[in-house]
Image (cartoon, rainbow over all chains, first blue to last red; front, side, top):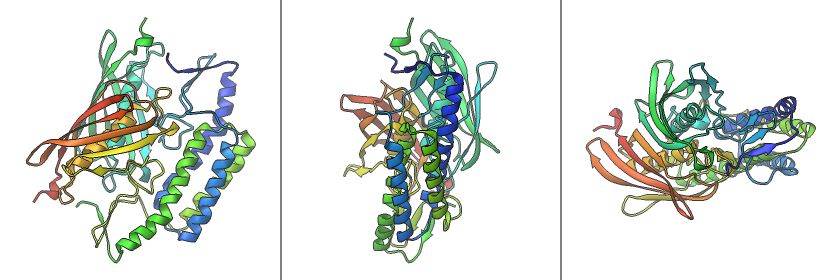
Length: 209
Length: 209
């Protein structure tokens, strides 16, 4: 069992309409996350704002799916990994990464990480760097939609601290061997590479032909 | 330069007071993130809720610090890594992990990951597993507050997919060698270990005596 949710009767236009409703909501919550970390307003104002947020949450929960969003695939073949914390357009935690696939199977993404991703002062949490690299390498390893591969091993070398701000990541397959794909990639800032990664990705049993 | 912010004139009581104001706010935003991913209310209701959220954000931004939160250290020695995406009590993205230090230098944490952390359907994004392991191993490697160590290399072996829900992670130092500390740890669910990690952590140049 893959656990993917197959959605019937949803056209590509329908997917775009849903996207136009929920993507801006996630964007607004993303800004709220940043403000929550950085605000210095006083206790009374925080309490008032909190009541407002709790009300917003209750209104959204008036109708909601049971459990997590999952990965939905429409009958037209649209994939909707919208809850994903790396790329999910409905997940306010996601930067979200916009993955560009190059012709040769490599992928790249330009993204911005602000206050919500901070570990060492002014710099990206090492775990968030790992998160980006895991996702980017996973995207190249799983470029065939019929052969999703999951991370087997991931090794990250941190060359220097990654500053918050505008960043780039890219990955490519270096080798495939049966159920395994080997991928490599890096994160960089304007001054060059900050962290490198190598990963081994494995085709899950349920997807082996 | 460590980049740590030294806060003068803030007592431990003052830190607790600030915590009592801002921690519940982050908790409310954390619930909102979950609702944002799972909501099925219609476009008009989403638009109304979004206006409410934008208003909350503007109110919080009426007074806010410039840039990210940083890591604040009070004159009493309280550390406030409150913006941290793994443990930060002011960061709605953080589960947040509550790190328990055992007497022998090992650390452990019990935590819950819901819809916002989903990669494969029903399971934790591999990058989020990496995030937790990076943080837990970093905590053991940096247990001496005068000798903060940063991740040099992190290797993660994913034994099986980690289900969303109640999880556990732990780490310990396996060896130290001058500026390097070697740490190992794992993430587990009720059925056992799902992912293992080994890390090499390095004392930064500015903290070498």
